Amino acid sequence: MSESAFRVETTARLAQWRIDNLASCTYRKSDPFKIGNWNWHLSVEKNRALYLRLHPEISNLTRDNPPIASFIIRVICSADDRKALTHPEITDKQLKNNDDFVWPIEIPFTGKFIIDVEFLDLKTASPNGGEPCSIWAEGFTTKQSNETALACLGRMLTEGINTDIIINVSDGSIGAHRAVLASRSPVFHSMFSHNLQEKELSTINIPDMSIEVFQTFLRYIYGNIEHEEFQTHRLALLQAADKYDILDLKEVCHESLMEDIDAKNVLERLQNANLYRLHKLKTSCLRYLVKFGKIYDIRDDLNAFLQCGDRELIADIFNEVLNTWKGF
Image: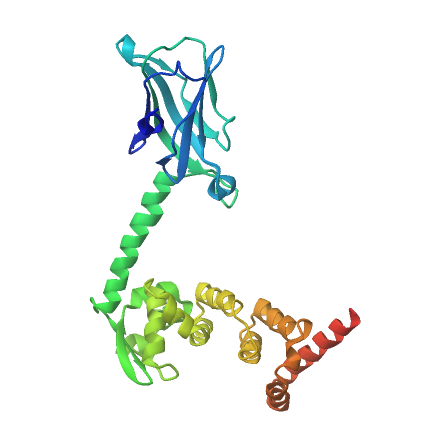
């Protein structure tokens, strides 16, 4: 049997499987074919009736996000002037395995026939428990539109298109847009809404930031920050996020700083966690030091910290030690 006997042809949302002769076997399963986010299979089984199945290929994606499919499926007899048998339209049926859609066909088919599947929609369950979301609608509204908008917003910054505010930092100046800054930060919004110096002079002085850090900060606000520069300036971005009340940036920094705690940075991370009220980071640092015994690996650094560190933070370390000892 040729390889083409198992191949399903696809275009856009349509799939067709041409079967030249099923008489020589009682079961046939197609090669996988891609529609939407999933690979699919069609299969036919000939017993007293012809059983036709459509199902997604088993994978982590199928297990975690099984498709909710709407489709029209037909069997077209090539030898009988393309006479078609059409199943009633399937709407919003979740398909996980090969038993979720089975079509028993009582009418015998001989010779060549075509299985034709037209996918009307494919959805996935909402992670928030709401209505299922169409992957094709989502692809337009959130991916294409957002990517284009972010690219344009990034160009406004990098090319200085119609900037209307100058930010003077410790070692340079950079232009930006009041509307963008105000929409992302309540602090900037307040500056531009009241009769403050920043509103009158169209300048902002930020002497506690370098131009490299502030450019990275602006690239986050404008949506075109690179991963490497974010990693390099996480602590400075955390400080800026706290100062200008940008909660999403603060949370991104918080989560990132918990990912690579080690003996070299744990005390610095602990102090920043305490300073910026990052409870999860503080807990992680204390557990790393005490529960995992790393406190003994940094004795010199810890002794220096105990001499000049925050009194309440030092008390927190000792409380963690005492609580851990109680567990033994």
